[in-house]
Image (cartoon, helix red, strand yellow):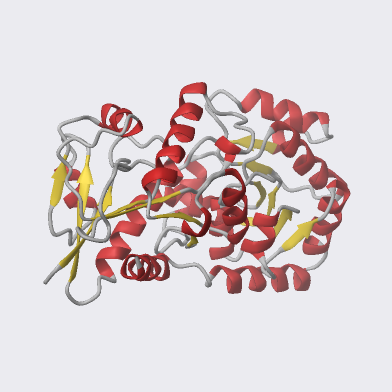
Length: 367
């Protein structure tokens, strides 16, 4: 008898979040590649997405296409309506899933969903009201109907148990950088197209206050390299540059970029001398994972998530003053920089979508 794992692919052509879209497709491909004997992977997609799913995820057994477009489908799921999607083993790399009543014991139906960011339940800063309401409503549905809810770190697991009634149903399976994440062969050309310098310090996403701390650290460390700020919303460049200038940086040194595609991010990180990750948010630090993968030395804010993800692969700044000291330690000599680069790369090898997929298969087998 063949067991079919049905993955929800709702981010294929119009992603609401680039990181989520990456995680969804990477996990789906890895699930196909690691399927145990007698198991196959199929997909559940919004209307008019079947061809895209088969193109992006080779090896799918079949694709179940909803009659609803993505927006209408996720709204229906929020209301507990799962039109013509059936049961079986359902796995979602987000909360977007048909979280409805099912029978795991007799019909062997299962529904497992994933949370990469706990912001909606720990303050909701920066989120629109509709997005906040959707996430909170879907977690309530998960409390009633999910057989397991996956988070990427043990820290986030503890936090989720505190704000929900999920208890032992919370499981930990980490994410990773995109498979094969490496500097592209045309990295120099990509940086020129992006109008970015060949050597720079990268600043990972953060709130305005957190970015201020990162810029101040670069000034305190006496570093003269240009600064590249990643993942800023369109139109935010003037505000970010203003924050940087207020800490003592010259505006011409500051390069602000919105969401970049995978190859462009790899090209930018490949030439970075260090990364400053100032955010203390309870979310999975995707850019930190990518920096580790490429052996970029990292100074990160003292959050429990960063401590768990970085472990011994970078430096944790226990307070604002420590950011500059840590950055100066990394950049103090070629020997020091090389040592921290090796530490980062070693840690980066500990994250893999293949390992994540194997853990997902094991979880569904356990359930």
